[in-house]
Length: 375
Image (cartoon, rainbow, N blue to C red):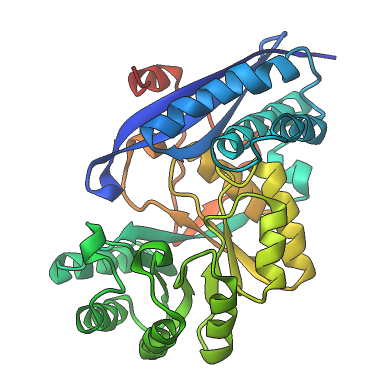
């Protein structure tokens, strides 16, 4: 039996083309066994201070618990990490850290057993649907129409836009402008391409009446679902919105734990549950949420808008469930998708093929890790 020999965390900073070149952050985790096998994980730590804090939690908090342990026993180690955070809770930085370590353990487990992660989870699909997902530049109508037209030409079957270049220009703040944008996007993507708008309810702050009015106004553009239309903590408002509109409601991106998702589902607040393995306690945490979704006959989408490691983890989770919708996918080249790994994910007609390679099915370039490492 091989044992865990080292656990390292790497906070990275990189320019994100899909966020107008702004600096974004992820934290990677590398786990190596005594016989040299390596697994990689990631969390979407987002800000510089949280990225650095994750490194501390991983290396000072979790590593002493996991060194010398059997990496095959992933769920026991996941529970060991949760047991460590009883005082400060499995959210925030601790949740990020568990997410990254857990994903690395799954990658490692698959490599040691010679199986892909989705085979270990119980593979159903050989490919999964992805949606071209971008931040809208709401004051640049011509530019946005060119973007969405290009997605249509590239074969995407599902497209998503939301947020804005600045908080003041976010989609959902200017009704006349945004409804015109929605109308024109529908024109360029055709009748059959599915469309999602991401409202970022935590900042836009619609009340229930506004959410109902906006969602009904958007119905003629046939949204596949409307995402985070209300502040995420207001589950009662989400349930009221669901009862009042025909469009499906998506939320959950800002939750952390299976227990939190159970509350969202029990409140009747969601049709399409959103989760991110780089935040929701890793592959193990997401799999527990998927089981809840399947029991309630809901569906889910994966918020995977960071690195190719997160894309891989999301793909394997999607490939193991019959209740999946799609996954966010960056439609243009970016450092964390195309530099970080030697075998980046390439969509074809809106699909990603599930790789049969052991583990997550990606090869991390460690020189690139060093290139973007925070000082």
